[in-house]
Image (tube, rainbow, N blue to C red; front, side, top):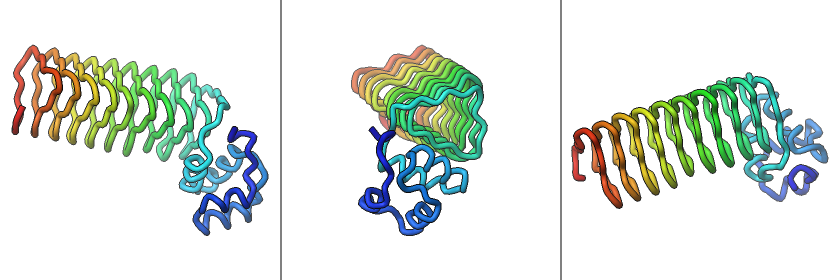
Length: 235
């Protein structure tokens, strides 16, 4: 596993790292050491992109880190991160496997290899990305784009960019997306659905209020709304 994998200089060089990052790595004697410790050192020195490169090239680990609260400028962890309280990372929060937070999550850029679970709301300033499911007990609010396999929110979904969900989205309150909203399967909303860009759903759309779209609405199966269905282009 990546955990037992020695970060030797030869092994690292074989992955074509950038020259500056590689020189810094060697100069700080990170070779031969622990993979996670090397990333911690890079992040502490403000070299988050180098740590991201390591995570992308060496992959996730089976390790688990449990914290009461997480407050850091940037944070990179290769395994699963469990935080009992709140998560506050104004910069980049990168997790190799899953992120579970008992409270809310506030991050600049949040990227997770597997699932994200929050007992509160999720706020991101730039990007929210998960390889698996994103589940928030409260709202999900993102300046920028959202990418996930599956999305579930107890409250509203607000996004200034595009939302790309490979499977289904279930939003218990309103949906407000300024870009495009794509779901591979179904979309369910407890309140109004407002999408400025293309609304494209592989299966059906179910909405307990009205649907408003500034572009085309495409649904593979059907559309069910308790209110009006309006689109600037075709349905």
